[in-house]
Amino acid sequence: MIAKSFARLHITNLKKQGILPCTFTKAADYDVVQAGDRISIAGLGRLAPGQPLAATLHHANATTHAITLQHSMTDEHIRWFTAGAALNLLSSPPHA
Image (cartoon, rainbow, N blue to C red; front, side):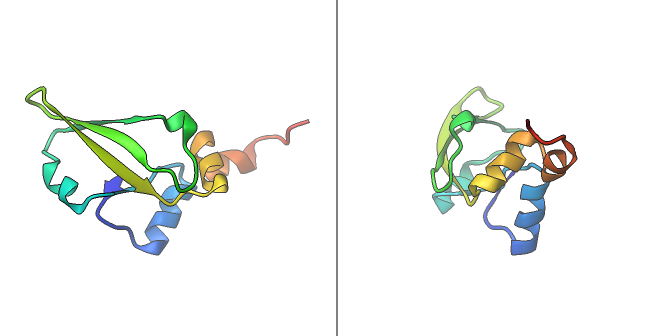
């Protein structure tokens, strides 16, 4: 999910549900988004705290626009994201 900003409670709930909340690094990138855009994010397998994400907007007219996104995920949040939600980690059996 990408937004200009998030309320603190909302961002916490998104993270617990396994959703990656991102904000635009450059505010002007918000104005580049078009209805119907698809987005691809490179390097999610290397998601790390404090590291920006490289993303590409794929417009309906077949053009693309590269943007950079920020996130506030900690190592714990990344584990939730990888598991699909915090609840998935709580409900899975402990590792031997």
